[in-house]
Image: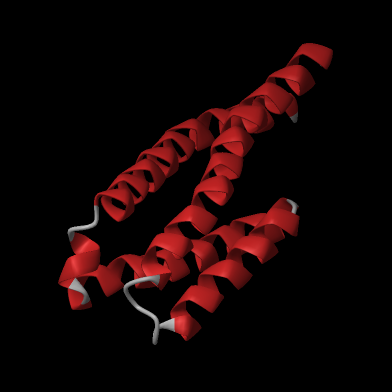
Length: 122
């Protein structure tokens, strides 16, 4: 039983690490967009707010807040279609790729956490 609980903690830790990395990348992304899309303040504020909310949530609320954050990030990425100079900015492109890679790592580690959780409850 103790080993199962430890497996759950370790599995969650890998997902949580990726989420924290995501949170760390977001302010840099917002800053790189600010210079190009000054009148998109509402979109940027939505990302900042969603990030702050996701960082404080736990349990079931965490999942919902992560979904809101993902939606807000999609809005920022969509801005690059309206601002070709932003789309060409190497820093923005690199941050966008890092966020995408981080989300992919978190996505692929989540099933391990869920399986560990299920087995620990049996």
